[in-house]
Amino acid sequence: MKETLDFACDLIRRPSVTPDDAGCQQLLAARLRAAGFAVEILQFGEVTNLWARRGTAGPVLCFAGHTDVVPAGPGSEWHSDPFDPVVRDGVLFGRGAADMKAGLAAMLDATTDFVASRQDHRGSIAFLITSDEEGKAQDGTRRVMQVLKDRGESLDWCVIGEPSCEKRLGDTIRIGRRGSLSGILTVHGLAGHVAYPQLARNPIQAFAPVLTKLYGAPLDNGNEFFPPSSFQVVKLESIGDAVNVTPGSLSARFNIRYSTVWTHEKLRSHIEGLFREHKLDYTLDWHLSGEPFLTPPGILTETVAAAVTRLTGVVPELSTGGGTSDGRFIAPSGTHVVEFGAVNATIHKPNEQIPVADIGVMRGVYREILERLLG
Picture 1 (cartoon, helix red, strand yellow):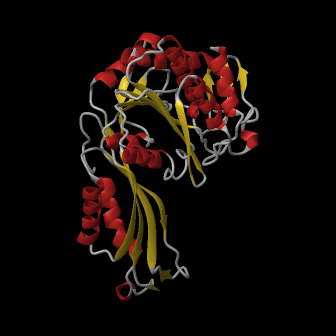
Picture 2 (cartoon, helix red, strand yellow):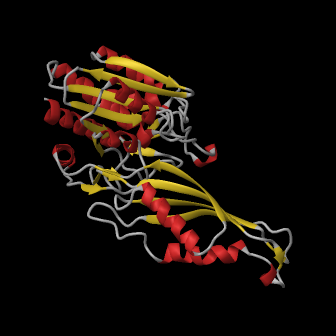
Picture 3 (cartoon, rainbow, N blue to C red):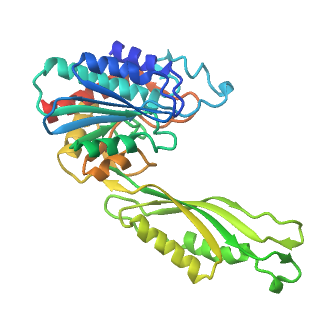
């Protein structure tokens, strides 16, 4: 247990703010090579990726995660240096403690323990680690999956160590994630004197009923595994030249978190249909972060849930909530993906933390998963 805590601290000490890996993956690589893994470091631009595999046969169980962290923010909001990990009252503090350097340490130590006792384990064990999960996510897991596809390599199961739990360790595992589709919209109008609105085209007036409709009626009712899809405007701006002049344009940014009820093509068509219905004069740029994915009930979900219950005493909720993860790049290959990791209450916040005891339990869960699937 102490060695896993020490390893997590070693990782936290490296200020790997995305996309800088800051040497974290070299630490992982050294331990994996010593355990008999063939290790590759795949560099794409500023992004560092690690691909490691032990074994050549199937099935392939992959542990996935990221070494990059979000910026620490103002130091005055931390009780200690965010990149100088400390343990106080049984809790480890530091940027990346929960998201997800303790998880990486737990996954790696669980694997080296398993390999030491099961030299002849069946199938293959793999690690896919990136420094581009918190950033643009273009040159990380997405690129590595393309490399594997080009080689003809595939993964059967993937366990991502993202912080999945809500209130206590073991209460939640993620079996999917919603898709994320963003739009950058400009509504074109015609500036004019406020006293003569009939001689102008106010883009605010034109867009208001569309916005009302988008917020007033749900996009869908969700399904058995997903909550209703969500439309949210994150920026709305219109700048006039004077207080008595209606603006000539309106700009907006919005995001839709959507379920498997939709594809991004159908969603785009639906939204643009509303704009045309209200006769908006607009331009719109779309950005797809990832389609929704879902791992159906089966051997992976049952194995992870059973391992979590045995080690924590908690029956986990199978959830598709939260934001996006790199699972969106892994699942389209046909891989079954489940996420299990730390409590997420402090991730991306000052004084990010994880109970030290939880690190040992996570290590036990990952070891149990290996025993059940490849032992």
